[in-house]
Length: 119
Image (cartoon, rainbow, N blue to C red; front, side, top):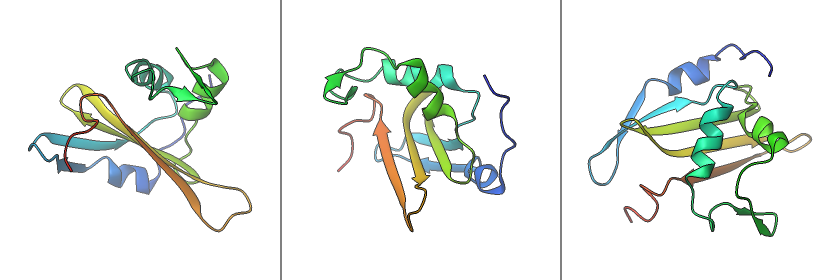
């Protein structure tokens, strides 16, 4: 596994954000670190089979190559933000700047504890 990258200014700013969910639960937002493959694996393992369904099949666990890709954030072109509610991961959001594109792709995957909550 590669050594964790230095935290960028944007990542440091994200680490200071706390928000309130619709039910008044405090949710802390922080950047995912590139050395947190185990956190990503545990988060995905806790998702429903329907949520884990990718590539036209349900993935019971992430292939190592995909796990490395999802955790290999650089804080500039590939950023992931972890939402924590207490000691649980409430969700992971990420955005990727695609090579040769003028925009970025963003995705958010809530954990079961928040899926369907709110409006």
